[in-house]
Image (cartoon, rainbow, N blue to C red; front, side, top):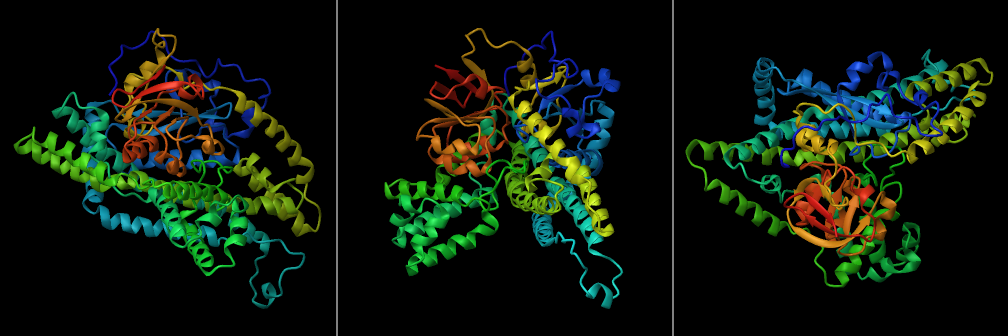
Amino acid sequence: MATTIEPPTRGFASPFELAAPAGCEGWESMYPYYALFRHERRDAEEARGWFRDGMHFPEPMYPFDFVTADSPYLSLGQANSRIFVVPPSLGIDHRVLFGWVYMSANPVTDPAEVGRRAELFGQRAGFYFQNWDELYGRWQRKVEQAIADLAALEVPELPEIEDESVVTEARGVGSSHRLLVAYHRLLESIDLIWQYHFEFLNLGYAAYLVFYELCKQHFPDIADQTIANMLSGVDVVLFRPDEELKRLSASAIEAGIADAILSGASASEADLRVALAPSTAGRQWLSDWDAVKTPWFHYSNGNGFYHHHRSWIDDPDVPLAHLRGYVERLEAGEDIARPLAEVSAERERIVAEHRELLDGDARGAFDQSLGLARVVFPYVESHNFYIEHWYHTVFWNKAREFGALLERHGVLADAEDLFYLQRHEVLDALVDVRLAWAAGSAPRGPGYWPPIVARRKRIMEAMRRFVPPPALGSVPDVITDPMTIMLWGITTERVRQWAADHEGDGGRTLKGFAGSPGLVEGVARVVLGVEQLGELEPGEILVAPVTSPSWTPVFGKIGAAVSDIGGIMSHAAIVSREYGLPAVVGTGDATARIRTGDRLRVDGDTGTVTIL
């Protein structure tokens, strides 16, 4: 952990006193009332600390997309407070300010209540820990079935005349009802998938946190990343899409079609198909490429929480660009494999070194806690592929089918405009269409929704220009939620650092979490989105608000990683450890203070980034 800092004399800005950015007038209409900072609860909300969830929501939220805030926070809180009864924390409240999402954890501070909850947690979590492999296998089947059900969901058209079978089969129900049911099932589906998401996740963080605290107890000076390295070198599903690209790149060279793949005339997938179709080897390779797409190309270019974070399956040219890079590196004689053997050897060395310092019961407790953490750890990353990537890819595209229906009926000018409506407003628009269709008249939506959508598009652009503060309200006395600490990297010490002034060195030093060990100097490349990944040069230091799992292919060529958001269990930290790269995460504002071309020193041992 970072060095303890004395509590600052001031808090953060009040969410009630920040002036709305120019052009944002009316922004509140885009979000549900319960997610707004409201004056009738001002005293209570100013007394809490609110932290921007830049890891999951690195840009303003679209009205419809807000479902990916509500469902996750609901499911997280339910798992913590009502199902597994996590001892030190309840759930997380969330708010939206000028489109940006903020969160605040609800701690449990009464020792007696913590003790009561601990007993329940031990029983309930213990059942999962003891049956982890069996229950996880069952979880995978449940999630895959939920994805299949959503993919099979039919968005019915409203025909001019119903099919005769409605009469001859005496159904008594028309297409308008099926449309209503389909939309409700879409919303029910995402609520269900997020309940599944948190069935295991908090338990994974809790098991790691127990191991973390045990190590800190026995080895007070141990570094955070040293503890994390004891779990490195494991295989997780989230690496599979990248591994498939590496395999396909090697098979392309073996098949003698590397030149065709690297040819400028086949830069797109469509062009590549034309180039490879004439040869047997080319057709076989394309067949392999297509077979990999489901599920491995259901891999978001962002984090999956926004409708415009399209996936590889939507734009195959993105993974093709990664594959072309791998082909070039292989032909240059590079080893593109993850350094799994080296990472695993270092892991075992660290474990043995610390285990030797313990004896008796202490060693037994260490072995048991480490063993459990290693069992549950793969889920901490693997669940991302199933939910945020595979499922969300299907979800956003299914939502587009409803947008297309509204476009066909003139209610929306474009199917994509659906995402500028709140989910209950989409229902209103569908009811409008159903009523008009049933009556044989025209819906009112064509004169009602387009001006609202146009206004909201202007508001979205204004909200994008606003630079949101990392925190609002008061500095909390203590932060106890395991996810807040391990994933977001928001600890009591980190928050006090944010509230304190920067060091008096001209702003050249940034402090964050020591995500992955090592010391590297290099040139910074600030990357704010997937479209900029192609600008990365070998050896450069990636500086990003947060990294997406689908960015994994670039970790083989960068020198280090720095992020605004993240803790020891964030994606940037985990992948950097797997690739043996230094990483500093959770700096708060690296992308605002660092410019592309700056020379940096990244110290992954101390969690320090210096602009040289």
